[in-house]
Amino acid sequence: MKEREIVIGHRLGLHARAAARLVQLSTKFQSNIALFRYDTGNPLEADARSILSILLLSAGFGSKVSVRAEGVDEDQAIEIICNYLAG
Image (cartoon, rainbow, N blue to C red; front, side, top):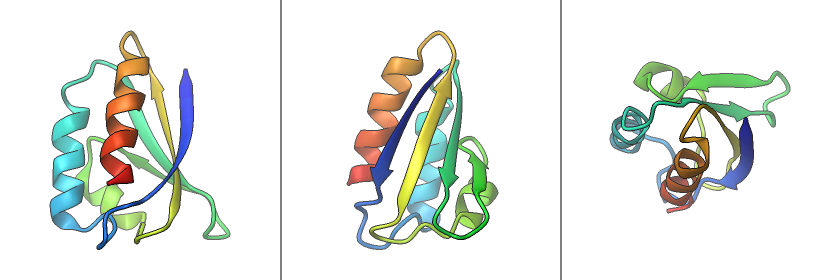
């Protein structure tokens, strides 16, 4: 299992179009990929293959999220997902 913290670099945060693109990227990997946001008081978790759960994170520009991947291609998944989120 790999995990990396990243700051959302998209100017509008994880809005609908960015979330849809994240889902497309996530489905290319066999690994299970999840996003976590801890700065809200209660930790929030989102499945990276679910656009609704990503939108419910309410991760705006500058928000810190952790990306966790577990599976055979976890290194590549973390790298590509984090690069996308950083903008």
